[in-house]
Image (spheres, rainbow, N blue to C red):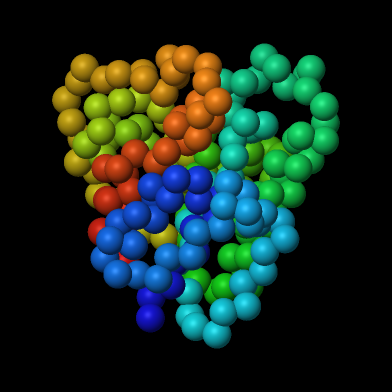
Length: 184
């Protein structure tokens, strides 16, 4: 059985191609009542891969102007969440793993991650948008299938709403599919 752990899964968009292909996808997210900081992998089966998309609110460079005014506990919780994802990955011993977050201060705040492996724009994988994202991990880089512009900045211009954070964090479907095809 092929198991994929999707940590801080949000909408599950990154792991959806795996679910569609019949993989056993385990989605762990605070939105469904499971905090990764309290989760432990105790499965008796081998884990194929681990996808991690920890919340970026405290790390994304787009919010840098507010960092100094925020309570430090928020950053501490965000760092703890990333470290919990890494701990679960160690527990699961996957064949590959990947962690995504926008450009910002994540590598500085969680130095054990090191520098990202690569960055991507959604348009490089068939989705005509811009939102530079950094990827860390041990996996194969997906094959690019760029589309010509014009590109939208929909995510950057999204109006405030109760769903804004969730909507901004959806993994572009073109990247999710390319990642799946390269990292079965």
